[in-house]
Image 1 (cartoon, rainbow, N blue to C red):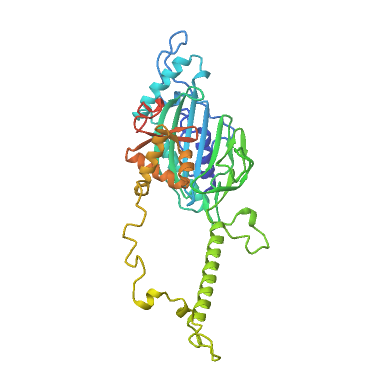
Image 2 (cartoon, rainbow, N blue to C red; image 1 turned 60 degrees about the vertical axis):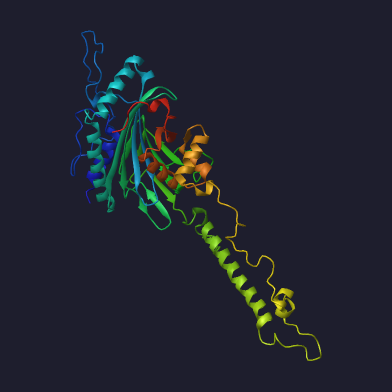
Length: 419
C-alpha cells in the first residue's frame, strides 16, 4: 500500500482546489512528495497592466482567477458511490472594481466553456489520480466517471461568479450490511480558511454519526440532509467521517437492545403483522368449514329435532326453484365499475410536468419530492432523464436544484453554460 501517494493526492486536490493553484503546482504521482499541510491555496494574478498598474485586459489563464470560497460537496449514495462537486465562488463586491471584476469573469466563462483554459482537463486528470490513490489506500475498486462542468454568474444572495466541476467516484464509501461509511480515503487532511467540505445524504440514506462534529440544519443529525466542516481545520486519518443508515437497516437507537423486536424496521413489522393476520384468517376459515361440512354436519337430532345443516338453512328460495337471483348475469365488466380518471393514466413524467405547471412553471427539487411523496433518489433519476429529453431544465442554486419548464427558466440560465 502506497500511503504517501494517497496523502499527497488528497491534500493536493483539497488544498490546491484544482482551479485556484498557480502554475508552479504540478500533479502528484505515485511516490511523489506530498505538499505542505499548511500551504495556503493561493493564486497569482496574471494580468496585463499599464505603467501605473491599472488592469487593461481580462484573465489570460485559469490561474488568474481569485476565488473567495471553495466548497467540496460530496453526495454519498446507498451503493457507496459519491458525486463530488467542486464549487468555486468569486464575490464581485470584494473586488476593487466590481464592474471590472464581473466583466473579467464573463470573459473567463467564455474561455472556460471553450476549453481554452486547461482547467477542466486538470480537474479530470487529478480526479482520476485521486481515485487511484484512494483504491490503493482502501483496497476497494474505485473509478472517476461522469465528469461535468459549468460556469455562471449568480445574483442571489449577492452577485458572484461560480464555477462548478463534478464527477462520480464509484466505491468512495464502504458499504456494510446496515450502514454506509465515508471518509476512509482521507489521510492527514488539512482544510484551509475559506474552504469547506460538505457531506450530503443521497437517495434514502440518513445520518447516524459523524466525526468530528460539524454544522448541520435541523433539530437532530438524523433529520439533517447535509453536514459541513469549515476551514481552518486539521483532520486525523479517516476524517471527516460519516456513518449513514441504509434503507431497511437497523437503526442506531436499537443496537444493543434486549428486546428481540427492537431490531425490526418498519417494513419488517408490516410483514409480521400481515403474516399473523393471514394465519388467523386461515384458522377462522377452517373452523367455519368444519362446522358446516365436517363429520356429523348432515346429522339431524335423533330426538326428533330439525336438521341443523347451516348450508340447508341458509339456502335461498331462488336456489330451490332454480330461479336465478337478481343481477346474476352482472359482471365486473358490465359497466358498474368506476371509469379510469385522466390522472390514473398519466406517467410519472406527466405528473411532474403538471405539478411544475401548477406551481408557475418552476419548482425546487426538494418541493417536488414533498409534493409527490416519492423518494429523493426516484425524483433525482426521473428529473435527470427528463433533463436529457429536454422536458425540463435544472439550475443549481447553492445546494438546491431549481427545476423549470421551457420558457420559465430563471434569468441566470439564459447564458449557455453547457459543455
